[in-house]
Length: 266
Ligand SMILES: Nc1ncnc2c1ncn2[C@@H]1O[C@H](COP(=O)(O)OP(=O)(O)O)[C@@H](O)[C@H]1O
Ligand SMILES: [Mg+2]
Image 1 (cartoon, helix red, strand yellow):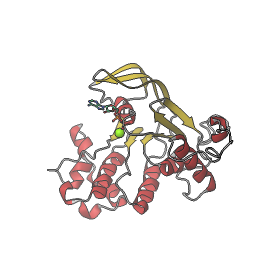
Image 2 (cartoon, rainbow, N blue to C red):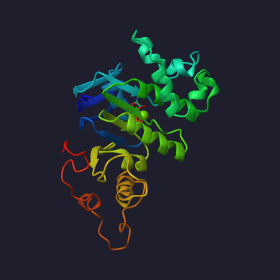
Image 3 (cartoon, helix red, strand yellow):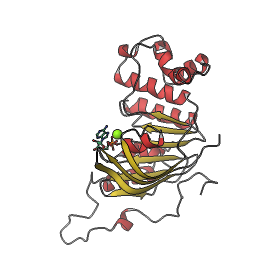
Image 4 (cartoon, rainbow, N blue to C red):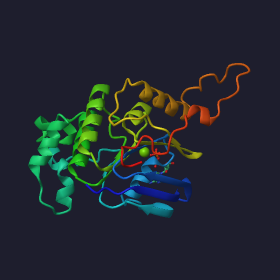
């Protein structure tokens, strides 16, 4: 699959209020780029812009790579009057394309919900509904996939399984993942960004192919770097009387640019 890179440079306002920017975000082709940050800083707004759903967003800048995009929104957006299977194939139906029910059922099988294909979304738990929304996104077969907190409602074991499945099924695609979970970002990101009110900061990822082992020392270290930068934990050594605060270059070890990217993409 010939997936494009994504790039966004600019400033966004909603209802006259600054949401973000100016900022520059680049998501390399065929890679997973993770975007973390506190609520309200504009992460979902960025995904909406790439998805061409920017109604109501005043965006001043340039955007590339949008189009041919599948978006899994933060809300599952399942239609309550359709069956689970019909929700999964909704995109093709809306576009007037032939519906491949067999392929959709196979993906439902992989998310563990083949036996619920005929049920209505209202009969499912929150985590099951999120897996239906994930199955719909994975069925879309788009070169660019935008995932807005796609695993947030899942228990730890199911989350790890769905992360593995999503990496497998989206091989070769350009993925932009919004997540609140530093462990998820450290496991899945070839490129890691933190967006705060102060702007966008790139954080070095661990080496190695994704999905990375959760207990891997480099993955845990990247998780700690992300948590530190999010302000969730104090920097080791800071707060000790007389200790000098650590500069960002100490927190984020120097790496070659693109060191976390798959070979051939550096
Ligand atoms: N439809 C809307 N009308 C007014 N404000 C909005 C709307 N959508 C988003 N916002 C505001 O834009 C900001 C960014 O929202 P969002 O992109 O959803 O943040 P995040 O995904 O990082 O939590 C928030 O302050 C939010 O309140
Ligand atoms: Mg959001």
